[in-house]
Length: 454
Image (tube, rainbow, N blue to C red; front, side, top):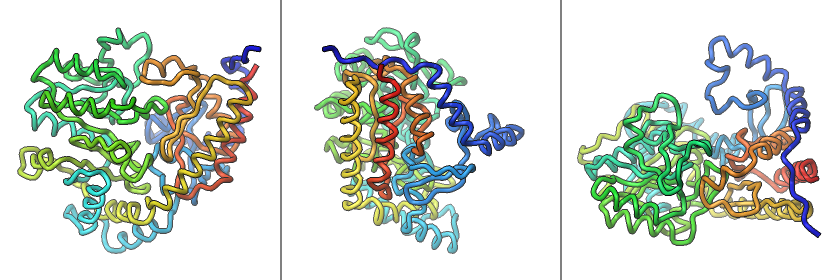
């Protein structure tokens, strides 16, 4: 007997879940109307604007967040990957409270920066570090460094990767299927308005998990490529792991051509393990960019590199600057996060929760005979609404976005807060989650599976 195939969610099912969503949040509706007068778009970032409306938050505690209407949610949104400590973690509260009383900004270094840089060097096997304030700043510095060190202009970028919103990487971030062009010569699609065509001309797009495509680019542009930037596990299209040997092959061929390898571990750093994908694979890049989970909820970023790379900063060939770089409040929070939150014991706890959740979701998928699969790496995970493995962004484009949207709505209405971009984003576990939290997610997922099974 053939297995039933999941159907695209009926518009009526989505409409009913959106009605429930809005009925739960009248105060958010009011605040959006008030905010629209002076806040562009009625929110503080375009990524906070989702259908049917943005959710305005009140506070968080432990593994939970609470909206302005008093609704409680298990927080598996995690601030797009920043909240691996959960909310109001005692170690971070203590560190930040102490630092606030002693001054929050000097534009001069404090001792916590020395300890933090040393700990990052230990975890990522890269000896030299600098700090910044966001993932965008870290990847911007990395691209600048690659160009400064090599004297070359071209950057190789993976189709579907997001590396922040500076010009050099705002190319082919989430292009539509009718924009991408041929696979063996992808079209560099602007990732936002306001990106000059001359900038796009400096970015060469390749598919993920295709070292041969990179080899062709290097051969075609011999002596012109400064480096390649990529997420070592793609996390702008659900979760797409690298094939065995892919990262090592990239490093070898780039170095053979005098180009540099840059990892964007803004999302994967710390959420996938103590030293991110760099430590998990043992393939150490020339530079790694960190942010999000690094500060336990406080805005901070870091860029690490080999001594050769970072010597350009040390001797002034490249000026890595920023008024708030190494801000003492951020350094205090980061030190507490690395020393007291992201411990071996807490990683074991999150691994156990991840295994529990994955087992429950796999059981639901098998029960309903759905052609989906679960992808997890460390504290991150997602459901891929597709039978075959996703190896690159073009596979991801084949997934029905309505499934992701309905899943998000049903999780939200069932008390689990997820990122609002459906199939694009991932869940995040924190050190403060427990088995009841993941079981709530699994219960909601079972309801969702029933709703889409014919």
